[in-house]
Image (cartoon, rainbow, N blue to C red; front, top):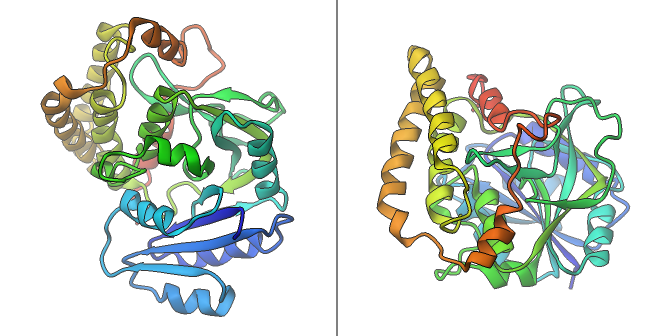
Length: 338
């Protein structure tokens, strides 16, 4: 049995997938089973894999079922100690996977290991040095858009791993699976599914560790983005607030309301733009779902509320961190994304 189930979801994007696999072929760590989740592509992904990596296992959906469901099927079919997720629009450093596994071995209390992700378009700039969650109710990427000068080269605990290049411990995933045996909440469809999982892992007593030596390059918006990102991020942020974060953890609802009202009004001012309209629809849908699910949100002790509240980041006190909505806005502005 392999130590790692390496899962790459794809929706078309054969050229991106080919480049990703080319970089993976140079990996110094080879004890993995590759799974490719074809989420309703019109391109011949199975034929591509047969020619490039015949040992890979392809899971094919005839129609697009969403990232969360595709990942769940692949996770359930594997049985390796570690589950590693990798976007198809990435290229990995030769030592990326070895660094993730080494970090996981050295940190048995860590459910997830976050990669250092740089931008494909500017390989000196960061996309994520692990993810955080803001007191304003938004997830974000540590260091996004910053030049990588080594300021994030310390291995440290962070809120969660960006699901575009992350390692998860299978025992931890089994520990926090939903009652319907879903690791990733399929109601989210795509976007923020890794954030929701991050909250469930912390509630169960697990940690996330950022591994600076696990280097990967990401082409933003190559597969998702544009109006798709605008709708699902704006909707799913509210689903996470209502379903994933225990009562009493978010400290200041006035600040959350003010921040999200500002985003809503900004989108309203740009309503002629497709991305802004999609974001408005997503916000309204998210608020409707949140109102319906509010009373069933998790409940924890006061002591546990304090522990989880310590995970939150306050940008006013941490000016080195970019605005939590920056990545979402960059995706939303890319209307060329499929």
